[in-house]
Length: 464
Image (cartoon, rainbow, N blue to C red; front, top):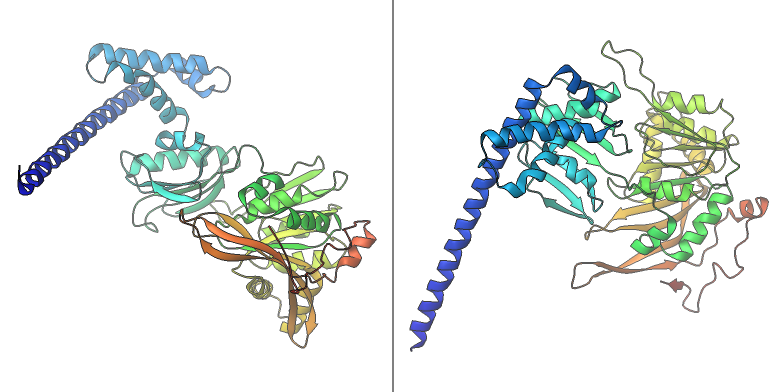
């Protein structure tokens, strides 16, 4: 047999395989459409035919979930008895679970919320749902029926929270019962239809050991940050969106001693402190009449009257930065907060801008003096190209020299590229410089080994 004949036969076989694969895909698509149509029909039938007594049972899901499943099972069975070939017999359990999610959960995205490997869910209109899994974005096969279906789920999220979304108020931030953060934006602001973004949080709070295992930090840096928190150093966690600032803030807050009184202030409560003596405050948007708004700045001012040992602000974004700095400068040492910035130097510039947003006409030098005396340490965090999070700088804020705030790195992450699997490769290094705030360590009885900041002959101590 000639080479040309063999190649032609092989090409024919490959073409046949592609045809069979396309046929299988088309058949699977048709079966899925049929399944979705049956599910939609049964769901509508339950809504239309449900008795008042059954509605009471459905509203009491937390009390007796078995009764709820029994009601849904009954309606599903009636529909399948009327049309026994509507779906394969093995799909009945999936049908009941999906309808239960539609009626009691968050519909198509409920399984995504239950998947612990997923950290973020992004609904871009009814037909595109993306997730972040292990640091990577991927398109799922989850779909909604239409825009009205997405809006129904959005309203189901907001109704228990007393929040609303409509054309007059087309965007809203909220949180789910488990603490997951939700942003919803709808037309006319969103041209692709209603968009829902859910940032999930681990059911079990992460620990410093988890961050070490993830490569976000190493043991030496963790030891230093633990000592800083116990020594009541004022810390700003800086980073871009999705860099893990809140997670890091949660972890380092676990180093605060149990006997201290902590007041946390957030737009949407995400922090999950493990200490007993914690007061959690949450800002409130204006109501439909435009009244009743309580801002982060209002809460920071109020927290000062609550006899806090420490104040933790989930994120400073505006004029509350001035109140936070003043709190740090007036006896509330050991306070923690986060800000959006791409470097430690950018973080200081952002703070300066936010203070100017307070409405007070302060000289720039006076603002910088406030910042340099209030903030002791900046933890800079970044999201790498492979999806991992790294603390790239641990930087001391020192003092003013002229009109400039001086800074020095205590630790930094040196990236050396990516391996063949696309994973970031690098190492953490100590600069060998001692922070000027070690005096606070002595005052608070915190000790580090004498050679902790030691350097090698090369002038830098390196470790992994």
